[in-house]
Image 1: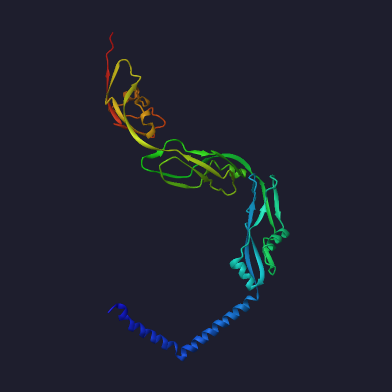
Image 2: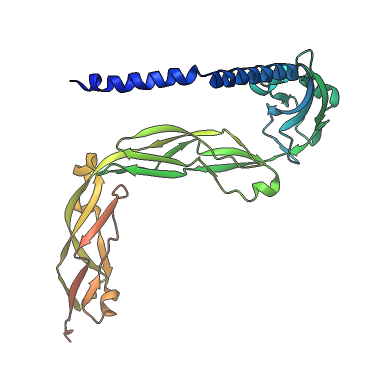
Length: 337
């Protein structure tokens, strides 16, 4: 016998019990009671929607075409709080379906010198009424008038600085300076603010698994009270695969007196450099120097001297010396009379 056949009697028994319960007189009365309650609630809700109510909504303010040369003296309002009255059914549209378009203040033709832009009551009411239904009454709004006081900004050219982190694939590195275009941007702000700025940073940008040269447009970080032109720059990051090359470089002691001989152990050291793969053949021993003035040997009583590179190609990323210390012996010759 299958599981389905075995469970059939129990299912039939459960259905029979449910049917008996639903056909009981008490359960029928309960269903009828709840139906009337639900119906009464529906009539009450429909009636309440025909009554008038007052609600508060906000309309955003959008300032457009603001000249770069001006700065606002105070914080400008960014919204208007509107009180409207209408039937509940109409107000539902404002709460769930209808959206308000921002009120725009166009500052394109605003004079650059200090002044005030005023949006008076008539202008505000006109913009609000355009968005209300014909049956809706505007009962109030704040602020009743918008006054925008501004003055001329000072101008300054500031360098752009990359703000972020570049993670390279193993064996790949930056082989030239990053290029930022434009390298300088015009910054407009009040003189007191402008004096505190030394550069403009890009938005924080993280780049992972970089394995080739790339170009990317980046926005500049916004600073309150500061206008930047342009607001975006382009960065070019030159990336090249790197390798290592080891060369024998002689240690040279300079300005040795005629009556001295210097013996070095070892006389040459190995210099291992990290360099772009495409310039591997360009790297030669003559491009490195390890020069030590004789005076450093005279002042050294240990006979052991740390060494470092005194000349290296600018396009080599890094170099290490092995060994990084040498031993020396000074031999002084007797002068013949």
